[in-house]
Image 1 (tube, rainbow, N blue to C red):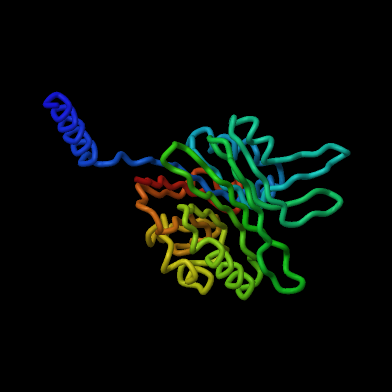
Image 2 (cartoon, one colour; image 1 turned 90 degrees about the horizontal axis):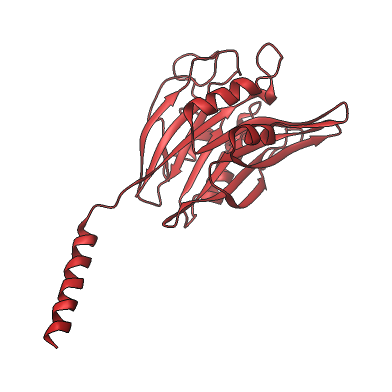
Amino acid sequence: MKKFCGSALLVTILMTVVASQPRKGIEIKIMSFNVRHGENRSGTSNLQAILKVIQEQKPHLVALQAIDSLIEEGEVKFQVQQLARQTGMHYIYGAADSTTGGSQGVGILSRWPIDKSQRMKLPNTPGADPRVLLCGLIRPTKSLTFRFCNARLEYASVYDRALQAAYINHMLGESIQPVVLAMDMGARPNEQPYFSFRKKWLDAARGSLLPTWTEGISGDRLDYIMVLQNARVSVKNYKVLRQDRNASDHFPIVATVEFW
């Protein structure tokens, strides 16, 4: 009986010690990049430039906006799939608009298998280009599962952008799972579409004035990485990659998010 009591006491002490240890955070490196439909500003393919920045940065997750699946001379040029093969990453693609020549939309690359995916049409006024929200369920460890979502909002209409931003916040803002959202919002932080995300979301840039548009001036931040504040989460760092001004009309952005 004494031996049993001693063993029980030892187990209790060990459990107390383990519980008192600080939980180790899980860091996720995320990139978001509007790739200009696979063409640089000179009108030639920018896929090698995109591949280079992904290989140099080694992100766990990549959100690609304005990426195409084209049919040229009877051959399908599926840009997300090409990048996935060359990086060894998993991928999903959400077509926003399709024609006889192919489709354009948003894509996600992931170092981990994507358990489930969801494509949701965003609201738009008649005549505006179709837009979608693409989400994948990511499980980097047994203790962490979260949704990684990607969208490109309408750039030509403030009303449509605001409508789509409000819809995304409505669809994701009450999620019981952690959510990371990458987005070409097409709006600055002082404009209406951004306001939908001020209460429930953590902006990885945290007030940065660095432009993410290659022709922009200070404050022209159009691209975002955001985290829903329904979990223990923080942003470790954020940067705008400004090395190559010709690869696209947007600069890629990178943030490291820590869950614990």
